[in-house]
Every structure is written in C-alpha cells, then in structure tokens.
Image 1: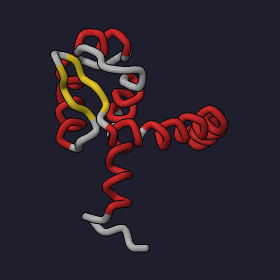
Image 2: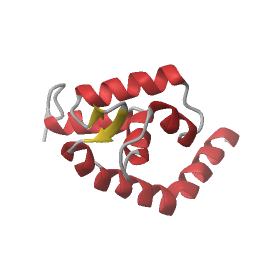
Image 3: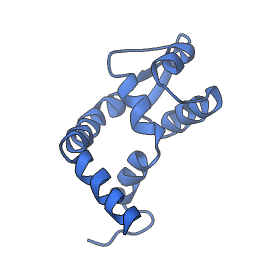
Image 4: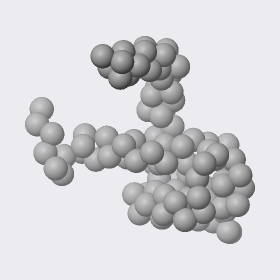
Length: 107
C-alpha cells in the first residue's frame, strides 16, 4: 500500500499525530464538557491550544459544540478504540522506548 498525501490511512495517522487530538477526544469520552472543564482536566494545555484543537476536531467531524459544551460525534466515539489501543501499547512498551532513548543519548 502506498501512503500518498491524500490517502485515508495517512489521514488517520494525521489525526493521532497531533499531540492534543487524542487527548481531547479521550477527555470527552464520558460526555459533553465545557471548555474550562476540559482545560482543568487536561494538564499542560493552554486555552489557545485547546481552542485550536477543538476547532480542528470539529472540522474533522469528531467533535461538535452543543449548548456551550463540546461532545464527541458518532465518528469521534469510533476514534476511542484506536486511542485506547495506543494507550495499551504505551503502557506495555513505553519503558522500552524510554530505555532506547536513554541508550541513544549516552552513546
């Protein structure tokens, strides 16, 4: 399979490549939340970056704004499973990645 600039696989990889996309989607998994609540829940994100991320996720059809709160669409909810898979992989292999990075730095 070729990974062309406009292929669907590349599109999916781009959704997880942005640092905050999966974090915001995961934070919305239990239901709608207001901007300020999301910001308190997600450590280390500025109000500006959260707004940009929410707008990008709205553009991509994963999030919608309802009555002053942000919620996952059906498409956004379907994205939870791949995010959870990445999380499981990170829990299982994260220490191995950090160890490899440490070895490379000290070489």
